[in-house]
Length: 70
Image (cartoon, rainbow, N blue to C red; front, side, top):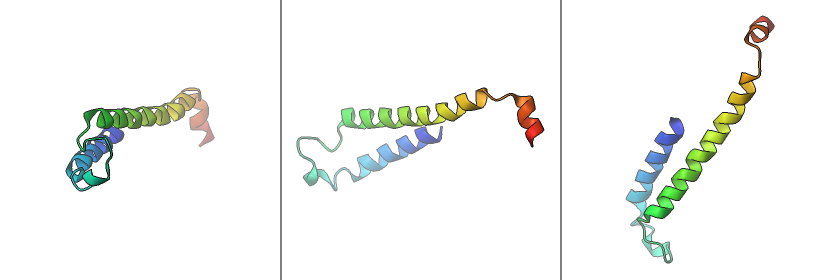
């Protein structure tokens, strides 16, 4: 959920600041929807994978033995 909020905030900031960097972009319009969508997709996928690895590791732990260890 935090990654989704961050991606939305980043996209809004990119749209707002797109006009300021328009002269530095070559053959890409400042509001290129494909670039925004691809970047958002990569960020969400990365956050999903980063969350999935610890979750799968936590699933392998027996809850009783974890509680006894504390």
